[in-house]
Image 1 (tube, rainbow, N blue to C red):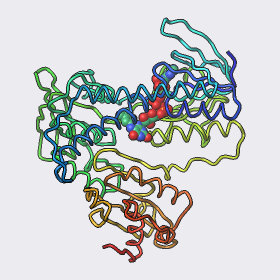
Image 2 (cartoon, rainbow, N blue to C red):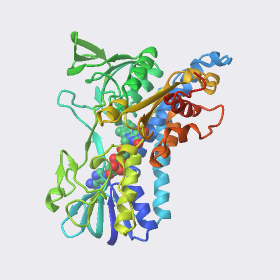
Image 3 (tube, helix red, strand yellow):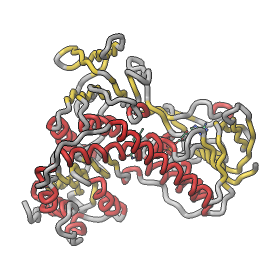
Image 4 (tube, rainbow, N blue to C red):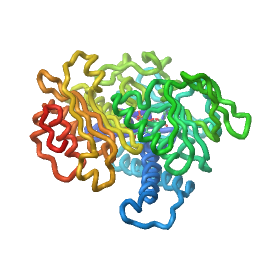
Length: 462
Ligand SMILES: Cc1cc2nc3c(=O)[nH]c(=O)nc-3n(C[C@H](O)[C@H](O)[C@H](O)COP(=O)(O)OP(=O)(O)OC[C@H]3O[C@@H](n4cnc5c(N)ncnc54)[C@H](O)[C@@H]3O)c2cc1C
């Protein structure tokens, strides 16, 4: 019952922290109240990507003739798509069970709460409690779908992401409120398999954290695919009394009512910081998140927090990187704080979006004089061959010293291409070093080299 490290929550923050802790020789336990793998593996990153793959396969079939292939009709089997996605998630969760065993990490099932003096109390499904003690406790309890007062989720007519990936029946019509990564991924998925989709975004553009040009291109692509996109639009109320829900939306033109079978609230997340003992132990929180230093220490000795419950991008790879950093620091290794401006962000709708570093506006706001280069996939041989000419790569450099400030991509497979520029930024690469790194032909990644060349007036294929 005595551990060096107890991790609470087994998402990509918690389970990765636990594995690294075990590698470093700590006697480690992890507590989980649901399935191992957290939101990411069970209700987030992985099952959504399985759904999106089904949508992509269906789109391929629908456009097969463009590739010279005749297909006699195709049908999206909603139940089978959901079943496949759940199967993929279950398989991944079992994989984490294996990893815990392999790394000799004790898995404790139940709801955990920290107590004073390095104690962790765990209540099991029958309500029985057990107490454990640890020199270090890492909180990695993640987050849940955020509720807005005028968009209360009932799980049936107004749903959150969990229900959206596990519905029994495909809705004929869907209003997606919020156009961040989660919102547009579901909008793309449901539209691709035949649901009539409307996106309602409060701000003046969709995927508002991305570079403005990316937002514009995505809006064009989603509209072309048949999705209705309303920006500067605020949901005022939802009336669920009739057969169809009536969503009252205030836009610049006045108030309009959209009827839909289902409404998906995708307006962000709320960190799980309640009932885990923070108040009793005196752990400081601010704006709904646990306050930590650069190495994820809270104000209370021996208590740490990582992942969606602390500030920073709410992404799986961020949670994992924080877990590793936190544990390595506990071990006394020479670690550097994470640079949050070097974190890639990906959205897996079609076309995909991937970005890292400064947007054009952020770079200007930060006082940089910039050079911008852009290369459209319409000029890429590989993109033409693949039938994927939508989109572009945009890169931003500091005009004075050539520092690589940011990259923004939209198009097919860009979520696989972004890692190259993440490394480039980490290594503080300049524009010319990218231009002089010979890229393989034909690949979509040549567009990165060409975009960098464009910034310096050296582009070849434009
Ligand atoms: C629909 C969707 C799609 C997403 N897609 C992506 C993506 O493509 N890429 C990406 O990087 N990110 C994606 N995310 C975000 C990603 O899932 C989260 O950032 C990530 O899971 C956060 O990891 P975490 O370890 O902080 O917490 P979580 O993964 O949320 O895990 C926390 C775990 O703690 C457990 N827990 C909570 N309280 C207790 C307690 N008291 N006792 C015991 N256990 C407890 C929970 O049951 C949960 O299993 C997506 C999220 C959603 C919702």
